[in-house]
Image 1 (cartoon, rainbow, N blue to C red):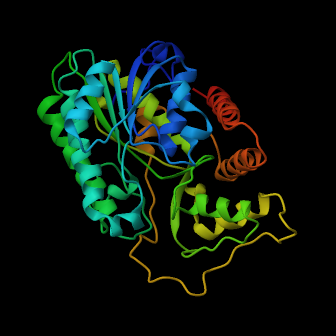
Image 2 (cartoon, rainbow, N blue to C red; image 1 turned 90 degrees about the vertical axis):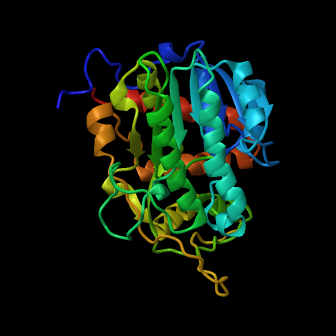
Length: 374
């Protein structure tokens, strides 16, 4: 196969590409969307965000992102609202992040989960069909879209989609939708290219989601309590949110260049040595957090745990394709990522500015990228 990372194709993320670029970003009031909106703004993009209202405690509110992007409140389950907002933005790039992102919540709200993750994706992609200046569409799904056989081998992009629980299966179904739209509507030489991206468990400052490991740990530490960890032996492909977002931006650029090989599915995950059990994460975060009320660092397992819903015990991603064909490599080891999260939350907990530290960490990460060998 011809080497796809060549001098004619930009390496990494090109600021010049994003300067003045019209971007339509769904889910900008969420955790990942907030980080991505701020990164795009720093590169000079004209960002229109479409999302449900932000939670009272959220990165969007803490970093005052409404001052930096065109903020449109709406629901991707409403096709007319999506079409109107996208038409007004007239985007060149669409980044679709809006989703119901929680496994355990999907058991409580399966209809909402499928409506958002599957039909919402249909609405976004169908709206894209009518955009005349659009060149690049990136849909974010999940590593949980794969049919998880609970084996030790990592999943490749060619492995079948599936999903045991409503969340996972909704993401697998979204992948089928994306594939169908790609082959049915986005095939012309001068039209937009469409890719899906599947990241591991992304972590970072400003994630306040309920029933998610790192936010649960942070809430306990801020309260001066020992976190309660229900599944300490579960293994996940942990990575800092900026690692995944960097991959999304690289794909978006290459789609806009008309590179057909980029219009497919992509995995973005950590190296094998950064795939760790939940207990490893909990121990390092509690040890790094400043002592509160004299409490010794550590965590506990709930003594009266609620009945366990099915959750995968082991999940790994094979990211060889992104490394060899895209030139993407993780730049931040998991231990460093956890320190960045503790730094972010300990800074904000004592009144520090959330936007400032988020921008600082984006710049620090961009510096790490520049130091990577080409």
